[in-house]
Image (cartoon, rainbow, N blue to C red; front, top):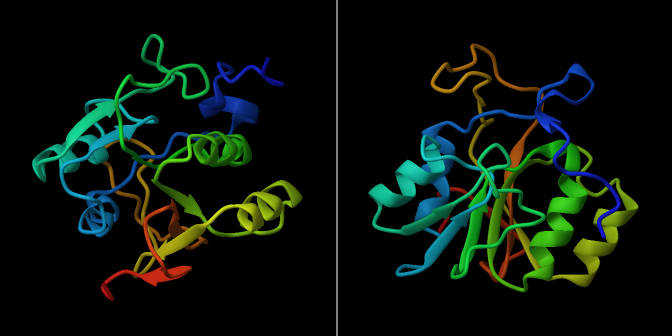
Length: 177
């Protein structure tokens, strides 16, 4: 039994939205690092997501799910067949998301805010017990509050893909592979 109900509308929790859309440039940055001929699960995405559209355009088979789609709660649903997770999850519950992602013992690339990444005791223990890498993007990601409407200013934080079972190096910089 889970400690908290993840069906709570985390997108509007405490008046702060946790639903920010990823621009195509941030998705395109990871594409060349993904294994070919794999099934990618995007567990925080709808068919309109840039992750889904760009991965399909690049020849990947994609399974997607989202908490707003019936039966799409990441903590209760898993596709029958998938090889790697790629997505931009809600940051407010990143400890739970990372715990669940590591529990699959499969590769993943989750785009997250890196501020305070190692400040949490829970994350510190997860990262010391698991092999992971950080794939840093060149520049800051300008997430979109409304799908397709680019924000005018850069966010006050750096983003990176937290990856499992994808790179030998602990830190990888976009454009160096």
